[in-house]
Image (cartoon, rainbow, N blue to C red; front, side, top):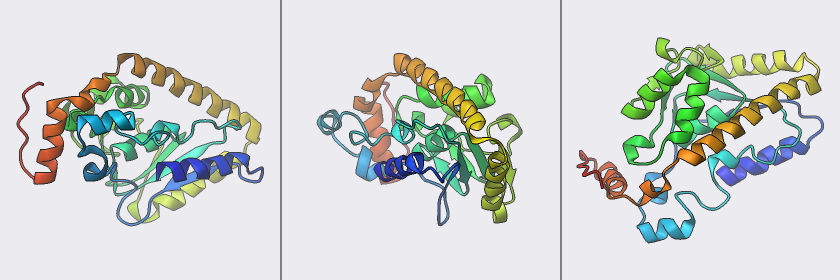
Length: 229
């Protein structure tokens, strides 16, 4: 899915007639995140061979990588945006969320490093909120008062996509090159946050016993027992 998204954004970047994109999900959710059984239920040796928990070239952070024209992207989110789904919505330049949409930074509860999400949430909604949801691993809704500033727009569930289209139309009333200068500045800010998070991130957590215990407990539908190892 990530590689297909990246290919779609490459086409968007190259299309002279396309000035703004909207990313949305179908069915009951925007994205429920990575498939735990497929991607995370692996031995340490398999994870090392893969170069991490993502196939090479298939990290969410790479979806908008390589964009040269810096066209604005709006995320239209509904249902659930968990883990990688949350990250994708945070990388987009604007975020329209349907009322009741649930978000979650799943990394910490899975025993993984959450530094990149913490940095991006700090930038959007403040460090106190970022620390709350990243350290507790709890879900939150876009309209939660503590999440003020997290979403650009909060819309009724029945017409969130219409609100996203209206936002895109409003953006398109402006000269596109001037809009892209703002997008370029924001993407530069994300790149700086990404660099800072990489300096702090602990990649070894994907090889920890707590990570494997979290995955097993999730798949076996039981309470995990962590040992700090």
